[in-house]
Length: 391
Figure 1: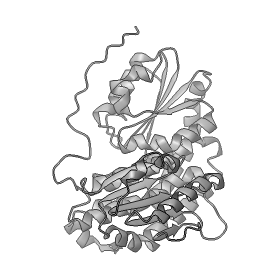
Figure 2: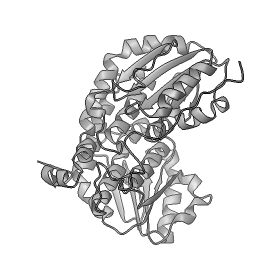
Figure 3: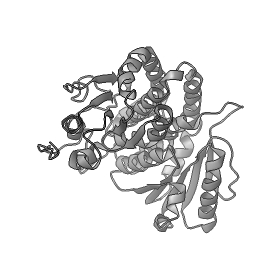
């Protein structure tokens, strides 16, 4: 059996088996995540009921690194469906400047995402929130039942969701854990209609399988192009995808490929200067027709400028962009994915690009950091006591 075009033996030799299997296994894990959240629907709703009854409730989506980027894709859906003020604030910001984000008299629903839950900031952010706010509700979404976050002790109301074991990546770079926690958060935001969302899960699996089976060779070919920079662009919930995509390619290549991310409109305001003759530009197109108008204009201008080495894009249905080097279409037939769900499957191209580029550069994707600069769980962070000057 081969995975992403490589035999298991070759993947083992190249220290790539975990990452390849975790990228390829995502569609199956998503189904298990859906079943798990649906099975817990009533107990999750019971936990959220008291929190959401507070008119002044503030929702904060938090995590570190890739786990923080999940919130960038989910902020809008929580705002729209829970109708509460919602912010995405990384644990790394909450730990150093908590009083810039948290108010003593404002009830807080802190939704924490963490693969292992052992990053020093994960528990520290939750503890500082308990210290500052008079009322905190902790919703903890993690992949490791033995992790420090899953076992966080607090007097505040707490609900822990541990995702299926397959979501707990063994490779350095988060792949299946990222998309699985993202899906879990999305399903919680739309918990009232979770039974009706099963068709979206099935379509997600169809799109992901197309990317993994029909397009893998194309992404391998793109990875073999001699680009030194990469830019990922997305709008709305896909800005989170663009952010995770830029980190994924940079992590898996041990920083040899320098990456940036931005929104389509934001990219016009200065960041476009990064494009040169060694730059790969990757468009993550929305399927919202209103949004697509802005995205099409920016993409067309970049293609016509002919400044980038290679320009490609992921889209649900065909978009007229003469001159684009490669366009990846997801849809077949009449079924369409809701925009909220696009980030779950649209991260797969960047995962594959990072995986294939890592191998092309002679690195081992499971542990690509030759220098040891990055590790699966962040090390070296000392957590200092926080003194709340408001009390």
